[in-house]
Length: 215
Image (cartoon, rainbow, N blue to C red; front, side, top):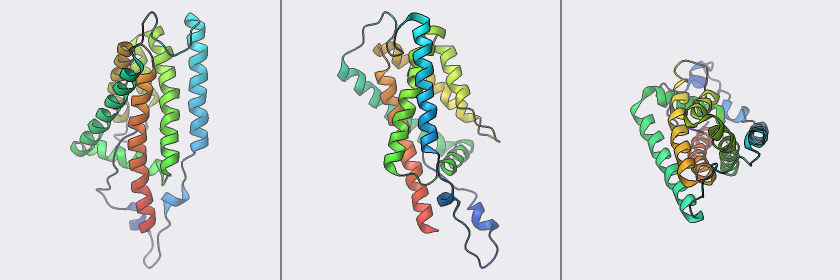
């Protein structure tokens, strides 16, 4: 899961640290986000989900036990609507909170100038891997609250003020868990998660590509 637009209210620290008369090194072009490693991480999540749910009730980590899924179109539309609403909530939060703005800046620096295709691919991988594990496997076994707390713990970032990403992830986990229970399977949460991360990751990456081009 990712935040929205980057802000740099404190200026460019790289430029401030550069010696006079020298062009600062562009860290955004030197540090590339390890997309392949991230894909492997989400694949491992999916594998754990398969083992967990298979051991727990012998089912795939997809459906709500005993539920009949809503029609396909309803699940897809519900996922898109919830994902876009989460994007709006994250952008509003960043505009209102200095801590959220700082978190967004830090996530942007971690991401670097990623291409749009890589950002959307990463969003899809995170949506599938995380939703299979936390909604498809953990929630049926542990309940929505514990599953959401685990989801929040995975999104913890060390550093001053960065812990609030876990708080945002906790709220998102409860919403996605409710969507899972209501729609009957993991399709809507996967779509919502992928839309949220895809829009926000691409926004962050676009801002970073623009900064790299101006350096």
